[in-house]
Length: 519
Ligand code: NAD
Image (cartoon, rainbow, N blue to C red; front, side):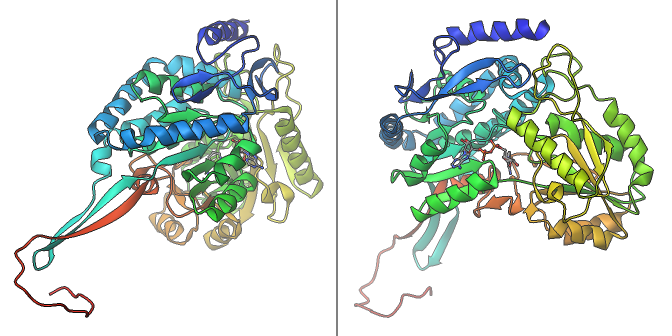
């Protein structure tokens, strides 16, 4: 009943917003500062994963509409590029204030469309907000370098200039944080932008765009087009788009990386993961148990930094009972209900896929020590719920280990030594994150040194770096060479220009055709 109330309030508010029209509301594109209804007849339903209610419909943007969004971004670029960086920063300063103001509305939209709990949805917004805050210091971040008198009377300096029109393609699992990893950095560097939100939960991106306009972002600087692979292919192929940020699965990410690179574009592609935790026998028991349960089952396992595999050095048996106790105590319910720990997974297909991977693990010899497949949530019987699930005795040849499950399923593996545990992690194709739980500095240092993951946790379960660092997934979890946000993010969205100048009265030296050298 509470959820129903909250959702109907949201619908009423949504219908009054310029983004939406009719019932169920159709999400609009944002082109040149106008929220425009797409002419396309084809659309996809955005479904509340706790209730199956159709929240809104996402149009499959037509190719003309896509072109007009790119042309609006192209038109806005020269003036925006020449807007002082201090003015661009001020838009971000205002945007961060507005995001704080509307935090609850944003979180409610995320919970309605994506399913995560309201508290987790606030975290989703907050982790994106931190990137907006970071973008407020762009003048310093974008600074070039200067070396005076590299030769007599000659100075060299570098300038970081915006690229032009850039684009971002988003996944469903962080509807606010990931758009905020993308456009705030890009536009504060002076670029203009085309954002394609996930077709599964576009609402938060639309609200953020409204806030960006309210904050003073000029028309055409941020544009939004909806759709799926066809829109994505148009982004990859468009000659006016210079750089693409992608976050999502490996299938889509590698396709986009190859297709856009063939057109000479820059691409940063953050993709799938299988994050491991190595648990040493000397780990602090209580903190480690809490970390494993939180990072394994939080957001119903739908985080690219979820800890989905625990490798116990010395065996898992002594840990199993306590983990099961803590996992069983978690409350599975709709994200709007107070006290919920795990909401539903995003879709019926996602639930089927997760259940299939659990069964395939059991069929190939894994021991199911906790089975969440049959969970029933009273009042939300149609929701895509999967309860916390634990498979023990998992080996690296099993399908449930090789595939990214992206659900609330924790796999237990065993290793006889730290060396063997590190080998297991390093043999996995993904390299997003890995953690160790230990009280031994020697073990921790060895782990940090030898592990091949791009983000390392030491007694920390989800080591997502704050925006003054970058999100540094590696191996199959990332394609490109400049990561999201931080210094690398600014480099990604700018072109470096190196200027060499000479200002001195030159005595006549005649013509020399020899290669100039610094004297
Ligand atoms: P997805 O790849 O299905 O969708 C992501 C985006 O790509 C969407 O906008 C979608 O419209 C588009 N898309 C999907 N298939 C496409 C295709 N064949 N061609 C062109 N475009 C296509 O991913 P998802 O299910 O929304 O998100 C979950 C995935 O994202 C997981 O694999 C997760 O690990 C990953 N993820 C990674 C990070 C990271 O930083 N490494 C962060 C969040 C999520």
